[in-house]
Length: 288
Image 1 (cartoon, one colour):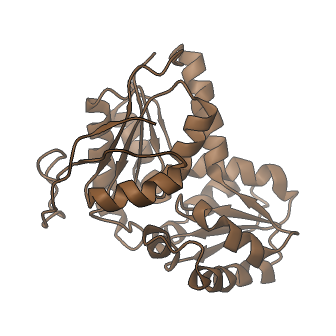
Image 2: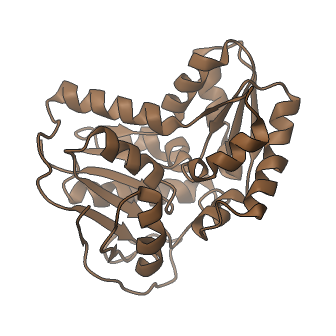
């Protein structure tokens, strides 16, 4: 019951999901992994992303995770089914289907827009899932390559972010979308800019809300809901630990006192796509 929940993303974006989990399930402990060495995932081939996602899932399960949240739309699109088959003993939850269900619940039969990375849009995962649930629903995708770098560099409130939001939302508004899915876990940190660009007539859906409800229901059904926070949360990154701690604390809404560096090829499996080495960091203990 008191084993941790594993959550991962290509970078800091998945902290938007981690924050929901901690707010909704305050007795749960999390282990968060940010693959900052490879951020952003959105422009990389799907088979490369699948390899990263499966190795990180294995890493979190080895750390004792009782459930894993792929808080990354690219990972969910490319690796969720494979991970669920490879690790059947651990519930693994992705972002795509919960986001699709949440959007359909408020769209009222009108077109649904999807803001996502280039890879997620090209993969078509949201369109397929939405149309599987409602074949008549029109889905309009918009790739947003500027968004993730803006969030990772702490510029979510900048004028550049607002301009990018206006540019990306405009095509969806022109197609009369009544609902927009934030199809990347980095995008909730740009929600104010996106809402300003969309106006009050367009609903903004963050899949993290439905993902958290799904996670809570699964843990309750399995009798694995924790009754007390047994030990500190843990945070890992394959990139810079200092940058993760400073920006990540603001994103999570609570202090991240320490982050441990995890090295590809040492702490995580050796991948043919991984060739560079990254600086080591500190200890992993974390108090919230």
